[in-house]
Image 1 (cartoon, one colour):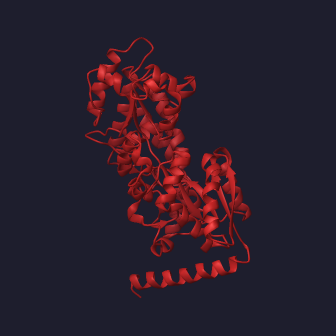
Image 2: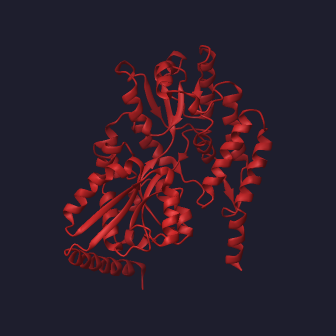
Image 3: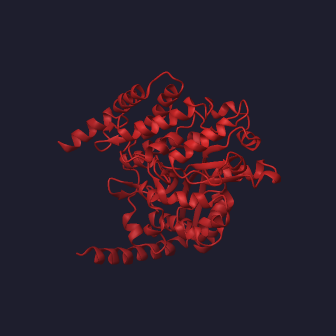
Length: 425
């Protein structure tokens, strides 16, 4: 049977299932359990009410989980067979839950959907949900890192535009630092945040892991280049050797001119609008992250919507995912949370596209890349943070740091290598 015929048949069958679900739901017997995290868990209830109004008989119970407890809660639910129907999942968790075979593959649902259109999503974000060739989630909102900068202070240093390459950035950082008052710096790179370094690393041709995620690849020329540039910013005193917790109020410090550049995410648009006085709102702007030779890549972060295999209401659960994926609903979700939509169509008409500070994020989202899609990645990223801090504090050379990272990554990935070897026997 040709693929096109299979798609048409599945679409017809899915439509019949959905119609049947609506008929049986008219008795009020369908309750969808939806787990959502943090602020998103608070505001999604408002959107869910609209979903329920258009689908009589389907009721959605939203359980809000704190991010600090969500991962353990999901694993406990898997072990006890009590997973929800739908959940918000940080996209670095997709690989882990897919390996546990607790997530329903969504390729056939998307193929039959007139709402979820893969080509409308930013490619790097969509790829965070594809594991071993299967789609396990639909992006709900996106997160990435780019440059926040004080354009008035940059102009004072002689530059009218933000940097677009590493060499541009070096010149600007050096000029700003040369004119900085004591205690002030050109850039803030908090040592407890590994994302800026990882973004620089994703701009390289070589992957962070090699051999299908079996070994670390930190001794590659690309990662050495990224770590060397990152370390240089501290060695030249362009960046202070501090964690963000050492800064009482990072927004006040930015407004005070304690640093000109800050690599951060979209949540700080709202924070700076709220926390800086009206007279300073014209002094700051955002820009895509510079790359080695030109505009660079950044991290494909955010959360996705997943469907669990144990759900007894998969048809209704998919309807909920489709509803939350509509561009108009995503624009409304952005208005409620500040989270950035993962679909181009949601940027094309009002909403985030009207925010001058969000436009750089729209450009950056065309150049984002997923982290290595292995269940062990978050543990490896923690080791990257620890080793990178030792390197910038002078405890390790770049050569020593990359060798140490490969050693730690290989130790973490030992079980993965064993399992993949058994699978191939």
